[in-house]
Length: 451
Image (spheres, rainbow, N blue to C red):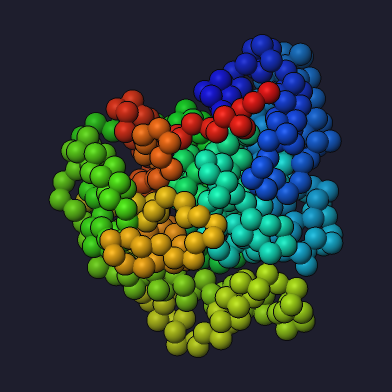
């Protein structure tokens, strides 16, 4: 999707009556039908989209303000409540659940701002995974190479945006489920400050870690999307003389050389100081596994006892293992999490911005089980969250930005990390890095742009 298809540009055109929301919605729905080779969309909401678009066009015709996202098509990961639709969370057993009676608050906020809901998207079952390989609904493929993973668990949303089929899509991020697919699909993905965006009406996974965020292709879309979702006013956080550091230790190993080279370029441009080491990072990743498995396992334990075979086999095994975690292990993990969150807070007390890899590698092939990085064999799935999972515990805002790549190279991303409430600094920094030629979305594939 070119800049002419960004949320900011679409909204400006619709507000000025240069385009109608109806025409944008029809074009978007038709393009998804023609070009979704990705298995990214689980349901097209044509009737809902046309009704939403009609309300926007009526407001424009009457001279009323249609909202800052007027006519902007968006998709949602299939764990957000959508009025009249069952919320499946990627699970076959929920396909016949009662339909949601109303939209999740964050979906309602987007629609109140003029956005038009067009689709729900594929995900790992119950958001437990980094690859969007779903035994019930199939695998979502990377828009830049259909033989590679899109990442997860919000892979369907990321793939639609990465392909340029929608300008905005919602996801959730517990251990990296927005940042990982954003990195692999070559787009921006925001995990906001914990608690900044409501999670009501979003199928829960791990309440201590769950956040709601989004994917976009345009740096101009970052602030407006966040402001609408968080119920705030777009803001700026000036970046002159900001204090920047690259995260060392755990975050300086097990990643492709190209990722570290990109981080070094950004660090030089931002005049970063000495690296910062978070001593508990490795333990924090282990704690993340324990806390995720334990809460997820206990949340689904009644359903597992009732019909374990209804689950995706991979998800089932993880949930059972999590439910078997001893109480002592969970308490120790909570203590580690608290300690690590304190280390991040201390680091951000002395710095405005921290840098780290978003993923250790570009998207693995769908048939790969392992990859070798610096002579070390890593899981092609579990270790996609190697650098995102520890940071999730800190509750701070993190933006995955796509490194500018040579033509034909698969996307890779970098995490920009700021203190709680400083999303605006992340957005302003991303804009500065785009202007410097260091950050850019991977161009949408030509097949997805064909008429």
